[in-house]
Length: 266
Image 1 (cartoon, rainbow, N blue to C red):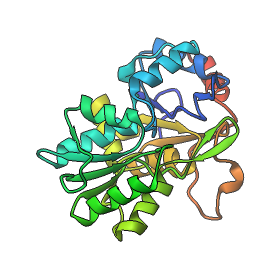
Image 2: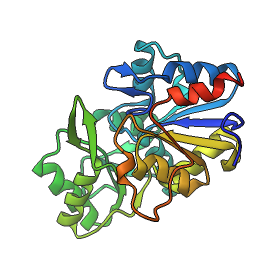
Image 3: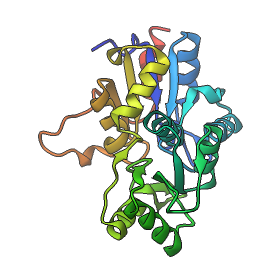
């Protein structure tokens, strides 16, 4: 494994890693500025389906972090890329937030509300999920539509609470349709990893994945051959490791520890 300062690509999760709520986390601004000064490849990899990359960019800039929308990758973008690469003319029934539908439309994917026309059912976080949406999604899948889950997240931390995210909706649709998801395209999937590595043009071993969740961020690194760093500023904690479970290469209390490692080098 490379020395901590010698990676060419540094991939950061957003919520719980770079920011929490409406505040940047300690060390976030400093580490991004140092890496940018060294002309490293920076990417911010989110499993969000409720915000577009542009939404995320505006949010980060409002907190004082200078990023470009092209450096941000969302689960919605990855789902759109998957649909376009696996279907000639997908017609997608979306269960999700307006941002997920906007991502499909921007990518040139047709959205349909007719379950009998849908070639795919795409599920993301949906705070307006209803019995009617459950029925329509299950009906489409029973009629042959391919079931796509945008991420495997069970919950989303918001203002000290945990809101149900994508996976509870996926499981309810699975129960109603009798069919599980054909694919999950978000972190930690290898499809997501392949898209990022192609985008950056780097070998996996030259990259470090930094995040706060063992089940998505760190698992993403493991599945895609990246070095991994867990920050204890979000969801996961040291106590969650099982005996014999593979551990991240680095564990930090916050990104300030990465800043300290860089201080003697650049």
